[in-house]
Structure formats: structure tokens, C-alpha cells
Amino acid sequence: MCTRAVTQAGLAPTSPIARLRHSAELRAQVARSMPMAAVVPLRYHGTIAMNLRLTDAESDALRVKAEREARSMQEVARAAIAEHISERPQRLRAAIDRVRTEDRELLERLSK
Image 1 (cartoon, rainbow, N blue to C red):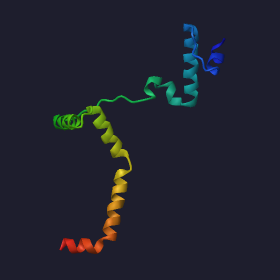
Image 2 (image 1 turned 30 degrees about the vertical axis):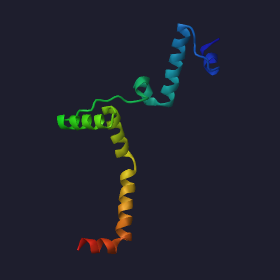
Image 3 (image 1 turned 90 degrees about the vertical axis):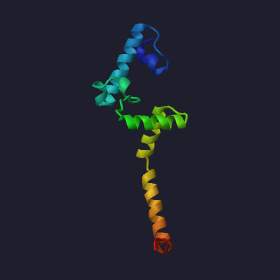
């Protein structure tokens, strides 16, 4: 069975030569659909590994928070990034503006 038939049947190639052909065909398909894939190896197209340089104080704060929450430093950092890039700040600003306009009189009396 040729590699294309194996691929279309959803079966993994079994011989080393078939696996190499299958791998080459996959790389070619990806390169055609994503031009950068021809330059950047496929292993970099899923998750991204990165180095994050923190000051000693930032590292200590991250470590303390991770220990307090019984999570890894990576989990805490990823959650912080996810929260930062989410729409939460915009929703919070909208809620504050709504309270500010709806309760204007009360807020003015409280501020005196």
C-alpha cells in the first residue's frame, strides 16, 4: 500500500521508508498551506516554549504565590498572562462606569 493510500485510510505507515515518505508529504502539505512552515520546523507550531527573565523580587513573589496556591510557578504565570490578555479589564471598566453613572448622586454625597 502506498503512503498516500495509508494516509487516506487513516493508518500510520509501518515501514521506516513509508514513515519517512509520510513525514515528507506532511511537511510538504503544511509548507503549501502555511508558507512560514517551510522555514520554521513543525515542532515550533504547537505550544511555544520561552524563557522569562524576572528580577529577584518578581521571582520571589511568583514563588510565594505559587506555594500559597499549591500550584507551579508556570501555572501561576500562565494564569496571570491569560487574565491579562482576556477581556476582563474591559468588562470591569464598563461595570465601574455603569455604577458611576447609576449611583452618581450617592457617590457625590459620600465624597463630601
